[in-house]
Amino acid sequence: MSGSRKESKEHTLELPEDDPQVFALYSHWLYFSTIPVVVERVAKKKLPENSAREYNDLIKAYLLGDKLLDTNFQNSVIDAIIEQSTTTNPDEQRYYSGEDAVKHVYHNTTESATIRKLLVDMYVDTAAPNWLHGELPKEFLYSATEGLMKKRVSSCNPIKASKYHVQPSSN
Image (cartoon, rainbow, N blue to C red; front, side):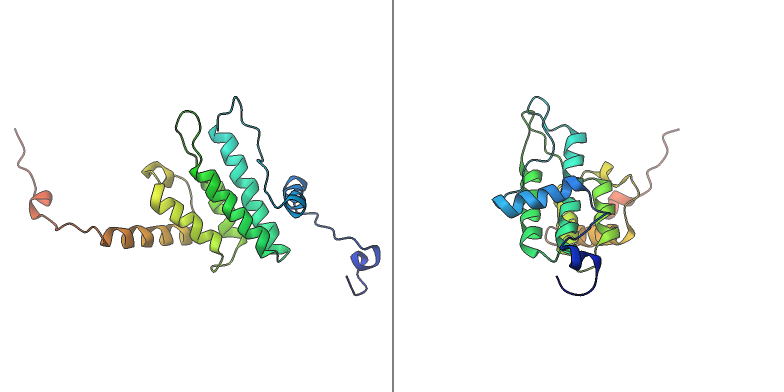
């Protein structure tokens, strides 16, 4: 560290707005090159609320990596997010990032952030209609819609007029 800043003189770096638990993930990764499981699983089940907390911590970790300009850490976090999304619990359920994670990413990253593309692709490939009931960022919804359209083009069926005909009432 150089310069006349307090951190330079004391050889410290203060990150008051960052979650200590998330910084602990970074510290663990620096020493062991792995990202530990963030939330203990109850009876080895991935409960939705635990999964949401884990995704939110991973999102915060990615953003910390962005702030620290550590692309290797960011890539490890991306790997952890993908691993999280492809791991099934004993009940054969998978959990994905939710509305809070998407909002946090879109409010704290630029348009070019690859984590945005990851979240869009996760929604395009796996989302159920009820995933859209929240208040997701407009940019995200646009990208997800575009992704769904691109996916649909490859399996386009002809439009049948009869599907749209007005049916006579049966009075």
